[in-house]
Length: 254
Length: 323
Ligand SMILES: Nc1ncnc2c1ncn2[C@@H]1O[C@H](COP(=O)(O)OP(=O)(O)OP(=O)(O)O)[C@@H](O)[C@H]1O
Ligand SMILES: [Mg+2]
Image (cartoon, rainbow over all chains, first blue to last red; front, side, top):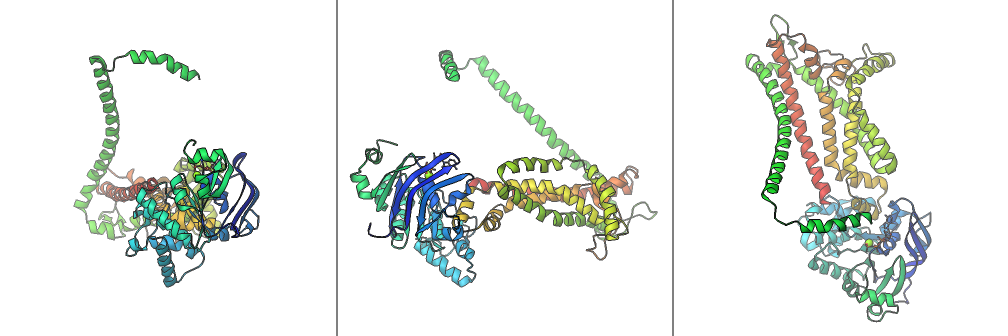
């Protein structure tokens, strides 16, 4: 896999909230069509790094960055970056399911409509395809006009995945996507992640060590805003190079 | 640190107390709890009682009118000659006048208010918003007679000279002033409901490649629609119940403008009719009763609007709690 060319590449990337450091000197390469997990204790900058990749952190006032963060070879913090294009190529799934208070159909169709798709039949085709990709089609195909808020938490999260897929991204960022879900719903999302990696690059932040071990190919361990160790998941969990990593994955820390 | 010490020092004292209450302590607690409840109950009961008494009084005074005179004529005829030898009580153009200036005022106020609410909650920085919003809310505290003076002394001559109207006190003048008066209410409530929409929905929208404009108009405003509707209804209540300003600004002509959309003609509202005529009637006379009949209509309208706004505010609250 390391022979593949990296799709996301950061070099000494630093992120500041005002004068407060979010992450510092992160250098790592994330490979396409695979699952990369980010683990680490609370407040160590996992979300900060993840949310830098699609620049959703821009919504916060007074942020600053240093270093380079490349997505498909383009520095996302370049001032010429088109945020609309970037975010259509880098989809995001959030910690708490956040469907719009609209119908299931309109949720999935939101992205394509922004891209200018108007034809109902084409939208229908996209909605069906993406709901199938998110393993939700079977459960909702007869009630696409029902409010998304009437779905269960796990279904809502899969709807959010379908909604993110509908803009045809290459990369899917997931920030603790299962932390609000029960074990069965979590299992379904993990199966889905496993399936999606054939087509998408997935970066997932998780507090659940077993989850990282189960779904990811490579794992990055963050601590206090720094990248401590980044290697294949097997190595990180079986035979980490750093003492800090070992303490964390064996549960002696954090 | 100091606090901690204090607590530690206190601890032995409290722990030396027995867990069970003495009979006196028990009774004291019981008495304080129940007398407190009684006082609160008495206060809130009084408020409710006063409102009910107002209802009762208006209905009691107005109801005989509907018994003694033709109800259908009251709602359908434009002939309003309450002091004639053969009095006529057709309130159609008065009811129409109230709705006319209210709705025109809302047509002017709502778009501006919603844009202002969006601007305050989405565009300007938090700091500016925290300065501007209290100022806007303060506008609601200006006495309506001050607005009335503005209408008569500034707006009316302005309309007369610049638009060549025969009179400056007309439906347009009243609507303009009412719309200014309704703005603070609508802006404030709409802004609250837009701000209450969680960050998660906005992030979801931005995350899908939406611009700020698209996020505001396709996600935030639709999600806040209950609160915005409630804001509009509250503004409507403010406008329809307003008395002093319309009395001064509307021209008080008992007519339905023709053509109906001609705002530059004078009209007369329910509130202005009641306020203007009440002093000239003798208690219990048909004219007096007819004014209370108008009061019943007005009360029914505001009551209905109140229920509608409560409904939408409740569902706005439910929505924002869900998130
Ligand atoms: N909006 C913000 N403004 C200021 N500081 C922030 C903001 N968001 C995060 N931080 C700070 O940046 C650091 C990294 O936070 P981040 O949310 O990335 O951690 P995390 O690893 O995702 O934690 P968790 O596992 O709890 O989600 C923390 O010290 C946090 O306090
Ligand atoms: Mg986080």
